[in-house]
Image (cartoon, rainbow, N blue to C red):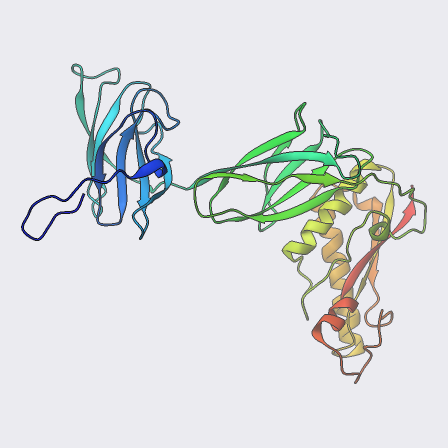
Length: 332
């Protein structure tokens, strides 16, 4: 409702379905940070009236509605929430158990701001037939390739993870007789649900000694930044495939061959490529592979895959093709 210049109130306007439900929405409280707190028994909650907060958009709609959680809410009625946006001190009313009577007033100090949480879910299917794949292993990684959760697709082939709004994740799906696949996704900056379904292709590759493991399993070469030998996040994504394959074939041994581009001196590139091979081997050992299953060394600039030798003008992308690690099967 608008407050006119003479102090009169304008005509009330319904805020619509962005906030209102078929249940009760009561006790609205607006802060100077364009937040609206309100109580509702129509939005998903813990029971009775729960306190929610939403963002007031420039067009007046309410978005990113979040339940304040069990620090405030209970199975009973919780309502009339107010908070000072500077001190983060506030009050609310509740008839929850343990009070002095029916509706009691409680005070609080907010020590942490709410995180925006979404649900990331989807189906794991066969890429050719579209059939669901129950039992597939699904792993959620953050953008630093640190695992944040693992689950098994249920009887309907579905999985789900809680994720933070605005963040980028990688989801890896794997199943016996299928090629492991990873997909990157950035979550919207609002609450709700994000759907990501992953289709897996049948693995038709029969590995033999001497094969390049990367080519056989659709694994990209492990690329490095110029003059560096640290594992890049996107490289870790591919190394996860190598790791999964080595775990699937516990007697397999591989030789890791690291290469550089032609820039810098021959000796420098030899040392750099050796460091890259060691870095790759160390990553696999750190993740559980026995050292006696891994060998490797650097080849420097001796095995370029294109024309980009010394003094040949090339793009950065062309040079990057030469900065790689390969994985040759030496035993099964």
